[in-house]
Length: 457
Image 1 (cartoon, helix red, strand yellow):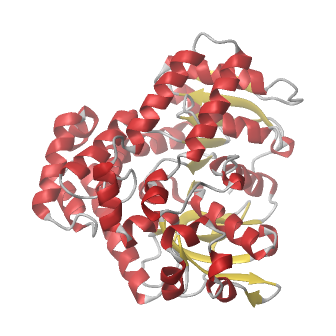
Image 2 (cartoon, rainbow, N blue to C red; image 1 turned 90 degrees about the horizontal axis):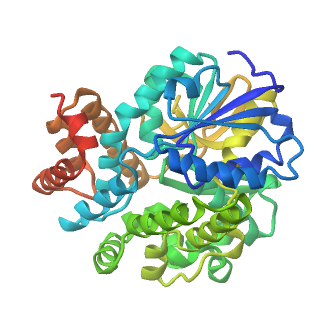
């Protein structure tokens, strides 16, 4: 597989009018070795592209080697000749997310963007769009690497692999955030520790933290005061983490505390999607006519508020309190994506948690299943690292969820309503055929984007 020349690298961001795009641009200021000289932003919404471009114009001030920024609404033009493509699309926008949340809650199940019914519905309307992206990249930029931000990240990455193989890599910032918090609690640098982590996207467990040849995780789990220093210790409770003998990804709160999660969702005045839509509509409206400096200031205030309120439902229900100050500066998806770019373009080997083909890492899944595990990545691409075995309960959750992901992909590709119902009903957080049918009926009535996908068969 060819190595990208560092000089004159073209990076394309699909979903280029999205709110998080300035984080990527900001991170590029500290990554001159990547040689990104052109940044192409693709979006279907021209107003959002203009606003984000204004924010980037301000960020470019004092940026010695700022890339040229080009915007387009033409997907073919956006990916043609790209060296790297960041895919961060959101089919049906935040209205789709709100429908995912509300249609689930209306039928008595958890309404969350990527977990449970919401993740299935999000995937159903996204898979065919992601495959279109993959086909367009294969035709217009056959040597490009695609870094998939689009949720549900594991499911979408697995679908795109059918067209792009190892050239598509899924990323998420949840494991990185967990590792940083654990390292801070232990008083060690993240770079000096080896983290044993495995599962699927938003469904993984940290089972070991090796520092200087010693696993420090048992000591952390045995010390309630130390464990409460990390958000997961407060979120899940120290006794539960000690019972598990591991630290789960924060999204497992919706699995282990589903009654509390459902009650919180039903009682809340707004879903997360409704909050973000209100916030982002205000931002784009106010920043549209603003000068670049004012647009940036609006973006930064909005970003800070967004970070502070991340997973507020779980923190409120668990009494875990506010987010740690160190978790509010960003540096999640953007840093992981640029680390992937650096590894494959400069052959500077790195170890990162990525969504990649299993290849025996989790022996109870087949080799093609996309899993979220630590990988060694270089110009040859990512290679998963086999760590400690997951216990039987974790294996069961992963296997059941992988079956749901694959049924969702099959439903979208075939345009099959019956498979869509099956995917929803099989999800352990739904667990009812009539409820699955009712949720899908609500979705089809509300979202033409889904009706187009499932109207083909």
